[in-house]
Length: 389
Image 1: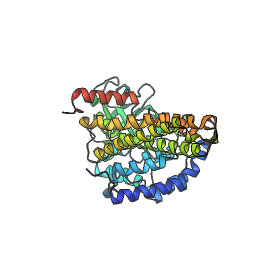
Image 2: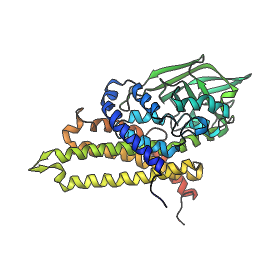
Image 3: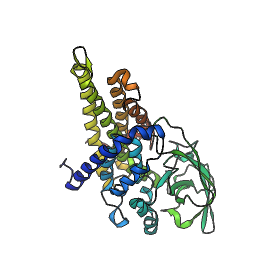
Image 4: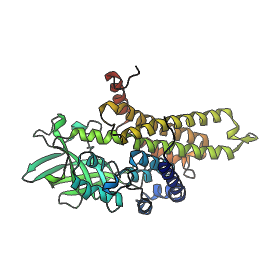
């Protein structure tokens, strides 16, 4: 068992660490306050070759895999979860295409993501269908060589910048059907008639990468843009399963960034003829978080390795969900404790702790809430997918 990163991945980690320190860290507060998309960081990521990390080399990426993207996101998330989200969006919408799409679809839609000439977004949730995916009402009806889509998708990260969308819709005659073969995935281009970006959300955190609605009104989608087979609900789950370590990386990075920031502060903050760092109670809080960060890292790196082996089917779900659950809940705890270590100062915008605090909560909700992850882990144990003898 080798816990060392390969020479290539270690070099990638170091490159991303320097880039995050030099380019992302100075922009974090401004991105949050202006809520403007950081196009400059997108171009920096593009020029550094970070937009194609998880995309195979034969499609134009670097082939670093999910583990490579996980490492990059961890470093960037130490300073800005909005910037880390930009990297995540190179995999979330492209995942289903790379898993089940045609060679032509990968060449037309995934390759431009790797080179940075296009952006994409993932459209699954609806106003009445968040964790209850089967409750979606977006409808796709076959009409000759096309499918006609109608419906509203919401809470879509990157919706305002995307050139195309991975959209899941009901293709059964009965839109209320809860059969798994009633949902199909489509590639939908933003420039097509009937495709419109709706209202944008007013978010507590992770500002700078807009989240909002996609409105589909008699949008005609060629049959060639069906991803995989008609009736591909399983594809949505495979795509989300393989994303667990990538979301977990955002949590690890945030926890690391928050704890490092608070640690630097308590070492300098004078109190009671010493510094705050001199108190055993403070040292214990730091120690507990440091231990949890390392535990989360091991869970996440293993999950990323599993996903890169194609092990993101049902029997591997508990391991993937553990990483997402533990790392994102840790981000909330770490941001809370770190803010508390700064006291009143940590609540003020003079310090990044309040930004970490606001950003952290999103991670326990997106791409499967913590409660959904617990359900998946629990069912995995009951089914014997996770067992110890």
